[in-house]
Length: 247
Image 1 (cartoon, rainbow, N blue to C red):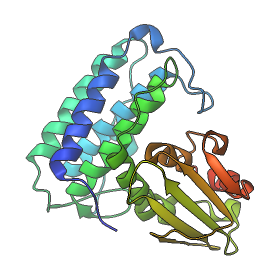
Image 2: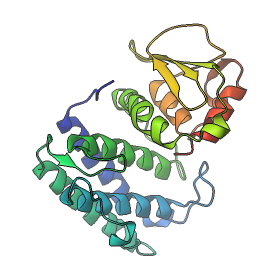
Image 3: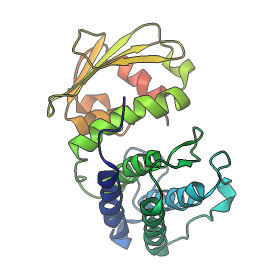
């Protein structure tokens, strides 16, 4: 599996989605998120700004020596976090635009090409913009093409490195994901004890989840409950997925 969008598309996504976060109404900052316990809009903005600052330091570091978390200060309290976030995003975009996309850089899964971070931060920023908006309105939907790529990235990066295999307790069960708004949007997952086999296919499975591409991504990231999609078969498998996929 490879990235579906271009470097320029990822950078534009970061720019647009970061702009939406930076323009949030300060009055919304203390609102709780409906789907992440104990997090507020302020927490989301602060976290995303912290990530942008950490990645800016990371791409400037040796490929095998990412900076310590302590290298980035914690976000400020109150409305100041919005300006702090905007500064972080501007610095991130400047760094990513300047980098050779084929240069080796540090990441949390080991050295990768610099374009890896363009993809990762496009998904990071768009997902957290959705998180923030969900506290006070119906969020602007995630782009379907970006969501498809986000599903692929999740299978490539997060499942192998972050899945809690004991909680998943896979024994060969299958999950079919079916996007209703895209021609190339079906996957079959086979759950193993310490791995997941993923293939593009339409096949009868133990459970099928059917919905918009963006909603499938939100399901996999535990942003939406299975009940928000069409589910056929053993819905408990989707609950197990969300318990184990706490990325």
